[in-house]
Image (cartoon, rainbow, N blue to C red; front, side, top):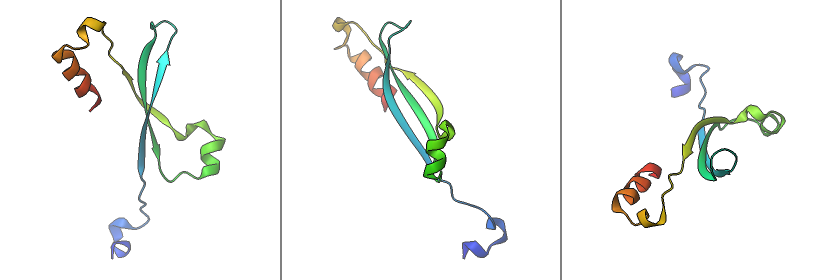
Length: 86
């Protein structure tokens, strides 16, 4: 069994949780939308998570591309926009 092997003695499985949130930044950006990506470990006790704001780490700040209406139907822009989020 894995708990009897010396190389796994005192080891722990730690799940990683990734999440994202869409936000709009109005000041100094001209009303641009961004997706903030966060990371946390999954074995934080609830009291620790609520007592300290250090349970989440910001790992990415992705800008949402915008264009004018006449370019929205351009296949190159649509492909770029799709590949950015998938």
